[in-house]
Length: 172
Image (cartoon, one colour):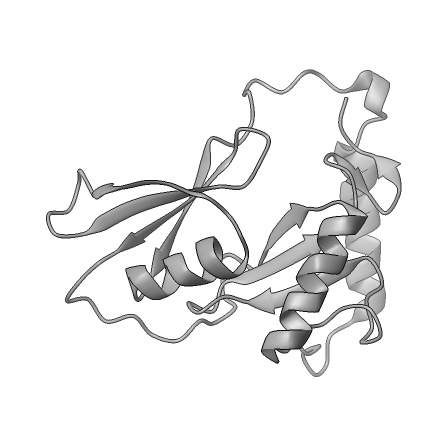
């Protein structure tokens, strides 16, 4: 996202430093989180089959469930296994308008998925062979590949261990 004109970067950076000083505690001083982790992320898709083909067939995420949405008749709710007992879920809402993706408050900017160096190389090869554009190695970001799924959702394949950011362990 481009930097807005007139943004006072010094003020923004000073505010970030204030927030960090106020809220970010050393790892040893942080309480345990009250949750067990992410059960699933639930996103909206335009087309169930197109989404399944992308995640299941192209990326290799096993489809593990496909049922009717219990809260909306006619809508599908389906899940992919994204490893470590975590699920990526989607809903479709037939008959509803689905505008193009936009970065805005409340939207998912991207999903960052931890991958091994071997998986990273395989995914990069698949993207190159399929002619799918991405931001990544040789294109500005060495440890990540950023793509958009058929619904506009940003997906990052991050060559880093879970709970680690730029080589630093963030979780207990």
